[in-house]
Image (cartoon, rainbow, N blue to C red; front, side, top):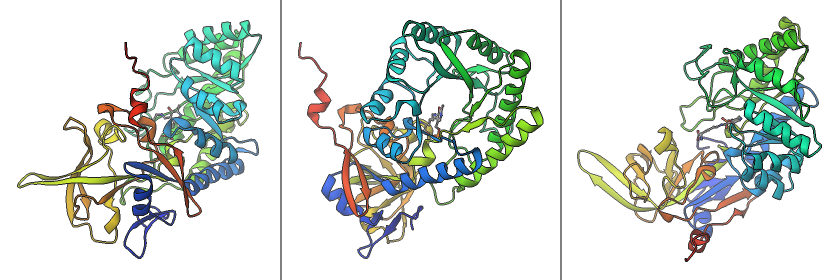
Amino acid sequence: MILYPHLDTNAEGHLTVGGMDTVELAREFGTPAYIMDEDVIRANCRTYLTAARAHFGADALPLYASKALCFTGIYRLVAEEGLGVDCVSGGELFTALRAGFPAERIYFHGNNKTDADLAMALDMGVGTIVVDNEDELDALHALARAKGKVQRILLRITPGIDPHTHRAIQTGNVDSKFGRAIATGQALEITKAALARTGVRPVGFHCHIGSQIFDIDPFRDAADIMVRFIAEVKRETGFEAEELNLGGGLGVPYLAEDRRIDYAAAVAEIAAIVRQNAADAGIRMPRIILEPGRSLVAAAGITLYTVGSVKEIPGFRNYVSVDGGMPDNPRYALYQSQYTALIANRASAPKDYRATVAGRCCESGDLIGENMPLQKPQRGDILAVLTTGAYNFAMASNYNRLPRPPVILVQGGKARVAVRRETYEDIVRNDLSE
Ligand code: LLP
């Protein structure tokens, strides 16, 4: 096992994913390439679904936050596993629609949905729209009335929690671009406004406190604050929320020393917290929704690159340049995110070398990581970066006109292309000659 049970080495000392030789995969599909182990995604979906049904109730519906990894095939896979999805744009809605995803199981998010987005969601029959603000509420109400519909909605609430500074800092996150804050009284105001609009049917509230969180305490605080808000709304308006969506955010290990979360246990704990708080606040237990993204898909993915050059700068550092970089993985450039990397064709050898892994864009910040432990690399080696299933392909760009890598799904000893590699023709597809 290398970081995760589905990653290992074979008799040739090559890295394997789902039992398949990554060096062979690189030969067959070229590099750079995203390789995703389908069984891992399915197993993660089942973990959440089983735990949610056991602890939230038989009608529990975990949602996959599809911003983490979005292509037609993933919606089919998630639909087969019985989850719902969170979509955040017309593009994601369109992809879900194209995949035949059941629209009633879609929750439509976003802090600035356009009229076109809202009309599209209404026409598709999206089950729930998570309304962010009063302007959107008015626009949705008008559009729904014009179409003769009453749209099921949740209201996006800012509970005022900064999960990264730990424990509730009650006003810590009030100045967020998302939702309306409890602390300012605006959450209650938008609730009253929604209850007065006939084009919408509010069923509850949504909050999302952050991403890559390992601690259960911020979720405990969010559940506590949100349940108290539900009770306040009930007192003030008589409306008792039937649904509470606590967002996504549970973390995954990127490095061997990172903590590992037992997701089923986390679901059980969140259920217990909400149940206790609801009983204390004198409200009925709401239907709890969770919408994980990263923890469903991150571990499933690895990225394979070919090493182009190894440069040693005495007294400074070693550079290993690969045939991808920030266009396929912008997360180091954006967040200094840490990854585990290795030379896939010598995966059993000791990591006795350190290098900065650089991409091939024309800027020095184009790095996958700095000072990364590796087997000593040479030109032509296959370099694998692990845990790239979430927010890599989804955030990929064509910077420097690099074509986006393919997404290859492996399952049962077979590999298939889920998203084909972009070509140079794809790159100029929308350029008009005049
Ligand atoms: N629900 C909502 C409303 C969200 O905004 C997000 C993520 C999720 C669910 C899923 O959160 P997850 O379970 O994946 O943590 N690009 C960043 C992550 C941005 C997350 C944005 N929202 C990264 O690469 O780390």
